Length: 268
Ligand code: GRG
Image 1: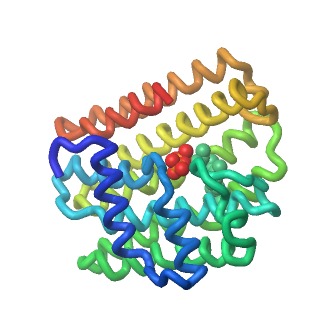
Image 2: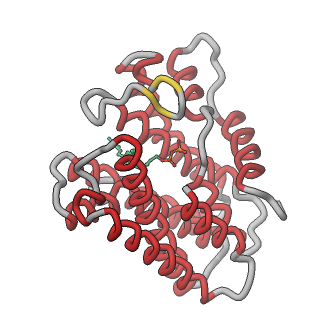
């Protein structure tokens, strides 16, 4: 995989996910999983797995990247439910619970969460690497990560709380994606830490950008812009992206894709 664009990566990832997902055309659960996973998306988190592993010249990373995307899609399906964010639309189409029904959406999310770990445990041949990847991902998405962030989100109001929600709900998965790429590349502890920190900064910047566009386009309140103001939010995003870049100084080459994510987030 050389000289690939994020779009080119997406096409290969979609093919890989298509081949992993169950295919029963009359099975509602299978259809719901495919409907949500194969919808048009940016695939930033799996791209970060690829971009970090690229630093170390890893050749086969698509299955691991797909597992990270399955986790992300599970979180989107559950986040859209009426008892959570209550969104009717996702990825330019009806949310999973609207296209199917709530029970199917809950179960499709559960099945994707489980499938992610099945894929990791069956595709990473080196056992110690496999356990490290599973440990990184599972600690990122549980009570002290994504799910904990969702709980906090229900009550978040000031900057500190909003920052914690961004960290737990969004940035930790970005960071884990980068760390997983590093683990797959046999990175040193120092390199793993640098890429994990890069991912955290990227994730925080991505979420602040998302809040900024919600504020500007949908006039949404109760987000970071309302807490620290428009100019401070822009400054905050710039600083986060500059910090992300500084973590890449440790590496002498093959950081092109990681820099391209910084530029992509600047332009979102
Ligand atoms: C597990 C119950 C439960 C909830 C999960 C993390 C989370 C809570 C939900 C994620 C949903 C969400 C709105 C997160 C904020 C980050 C965000 C803007 C996600 C959308 O990600 P994109 O823009 O989406 O990368 P695509 O569709 O391109 O993958």
